Image (cartoon, rainbow, N blue to C red; front, side, top):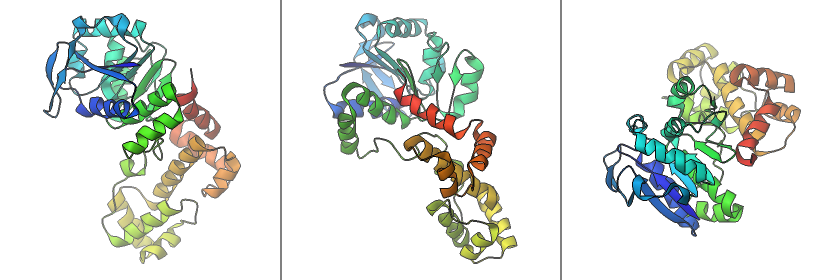
Length: 316
């Protein structure tokens, strides 16, 4: 099985090396790196990588799996007519086409996003929506599969994507073995979202607020009213409210709700627990409350969220 990586000046080096290591540890893959011209290619961090092939040297009909790296150089790269044309030709012959992070913009320049559900790094979501209204942009998942087109979020998400491609080729056991070798999760906790708690939340600065936050994260479904959190922090409710908002940027009630939503998203994506039972376990009280919160925060019902995320791996 052959995997062809596309890089260019100022590409993100981990977009190449992360997936390359996954395929290398899985074994059985013929890996090659292609650039606009063969030779050294500077990454955005300054680390040079060697491309053994230029696009003019690689017949597009010899590409089986195509993986396009992202990086800050992607905007210049998509103005390279020869590179974009080669990607478009290779995509017509490839069994699968994938992008990491902002590499999706090169796929867009090659005309490959029409009617497709895709993702990218959260910081470029609005740009992707604006420049490619023909695509259905969903920047919640770590990666998205739409038929033979696979796209992923930023940087390390390329590793998740590569593990899923290995699983698609050779089954769960082979992908799991590669993940263990790399000391990676085959399915990282919360892998359905780029916006897990450590990303969207500031870190508390003081021990009392750390204690309150730790209690919420340890058991999202427990009682976390203002008075309960104040008791855990050893502060008065008014003092906790003020300190919590100052250190984390949100009031306690909003923080608790968001942590519960994150826990619900993981549970919906990874299990079959009924929505009503899940709502009770995670502190929402009723399934109707959970549905209202999901519609307000995510614009989708819990059942639809479960179906959507599972479809990122199962759609053919």
